[in-house]
Image 1 (cartoon, rainbow, N blue to C red):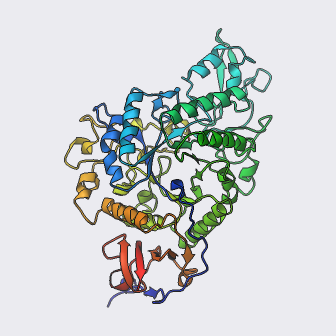
Image 2 (tube, protein in one colour):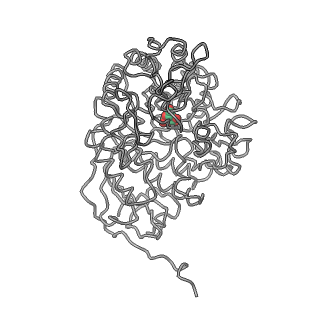
Image 3 (spheres, rainbow, N blue to C red):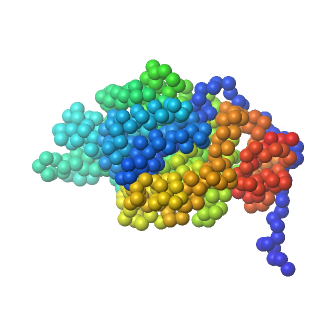
Length: 559
Ligand code: GLC
């Protein structure tokens, strides 16, 4: 006799003639490209290594751009490729106006943009204005200069506290663990002033109270705008200005709210004067032709505060971290989508959606909860649901292959400063940054070098390699290809959203965008879905015979 566990789970149903709540978000007529864009994040060091030195390079990106055109993306956003000692994956910039020899030259960059333009792909680059590398000429000059000098005033130097100045100026903590201050040594070897670094000690924070810092970044913006970039993703955009007097802070080092210490009280994040900087930058972008954009990386909560970054005289887009961090929970996801659309609509800005980037475990790993197959099923369904949402989408290289994180990188090969700064307590972000697999049968899956890449790849990626997936109509790559092309064809990015009444309070996400009904089963049981033609399905069986199994998503045109 079958036991209770093996009995088929109860089938719940969405009504065959579904009804919808009044639209939460309506389609708009503003056809600015960035209101509905799909932007693909390239992490250059791990994309494609054309010269075989184990590091991805600009020429490698250029050589493969056609593969991204094939995914119908509007733009790429390139993580930093500037001159850098790579202490924090290039977010430690030693020269903002040059290419690190590891990645190539400025001419390689020009070739990349020329090829991208030919393929109809815009190029957005990463601007890192909060801090530079300790190898930057300005910081070296500051170290060599006296306390109180104009050189030191480019950064945040302070005397220490305590009788001999041996305690840091305040209690701020680095994002990567440990104090946010490092003490310098004077020429004669005696201990000197301290400098602030919200990240690694090799990443000194600029002093944005100093007009010379503003001038320097305006020069950098123009340098790249003149080189035809379509815009900038602005790194830690909420941190540039610090509260006067640098008061102690007892909340989270990343400024995210806790009950006792709401993020709006953090002295190193979200200060009012920041908004004037972006107003100025927006007006600079406006001097250039083409519809160029700024996108904020600002871990500001709640969403109603974040949208201050995207008022129409400031940035165009901001990453939606609430969405990025949503758990596998339909009620919570519904709430985040609702809050996001309401918040961004309130200032007339597009919402963005993102499931993976170079700073978090990939969503195939997060959603799997240690079960890789479940992770891939869920990642495919979650991606298909995301691609039907109105607004802009950010994709991270490799998610279109369904890549999971590499979970067993040996400690001695780890590169992320978080690992060392926390004594291994936090393994860091290397797992989502490993080189991409291009060809199943080649060494290191055709990433580039016969000796491997700068981080090792897992041993079981042959079936995930791009060429294996190209040939397989059921692959994750082909799912992304068809969904992205349909998203464009059906105008879903510029579309609307109305929640299905039947799905209220259930484990199912169900909404209408234009005339497409999207159903995403996050529960444990099969559900019956209304009759209609299947436009896109996360799995071959999704929506077949009117049934949607758990961890599946389907786009339907209702009969
Ligand atoms: C941003 C980047 C991250 C980097 C940090 C410091 O959060 O995305 O990779 O470590 O800024 O620049």
